[in-house]
Amino acid sequence: MDQVTWRLQIRGHVARELVLTYDDLLSRPSSVTRALLDCTGGWFTRQDWQGVHISTLLAEARVLDEARSLIVKSVTGYDRRFRLDDADRLLLALQVAGEPLSPVHGFPARLVAPGRRGYNWVKWVQSVEVSGDPPVLQPPLPLQ
Image (tube, rainbow, N blue to C red; front, side, top):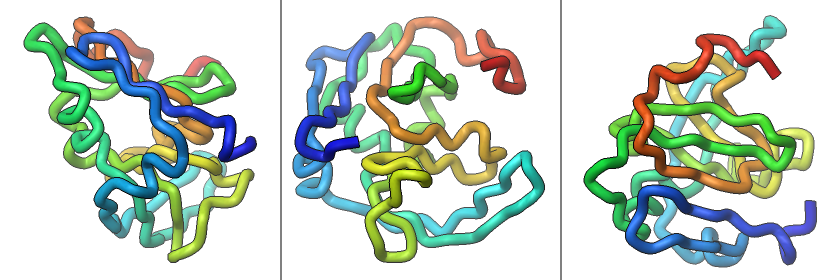
């Protein structure tokens, strides 16, 4: 994916929809989260992931009162739904181990969901949609 043309959208039940470039994300305050990526294929790795917390972006977009969940969507069409109050723990990673993400690991942006299995760690994130639907409206395992 081309970091010049890629955009991240924050939309849905927000007062102000955002369309952010890769450089926009790099200019925001970043955090480092040490988290274990536990792949369903049997391998795992504990790494330092650096990026912007989803809660930071949602605060900027000003989440509306009726919001109940958020959906992180990939350019591939894959998505995962989370409780709105999980946003403080969810990181939109731009780097791992001090280096930019590689394309195979989700460049330009990948969701880091500490304490959750790897299929929740959405790669190639293109949007975060704030929803009025409850977070339980999702199969426990991906069907895609």
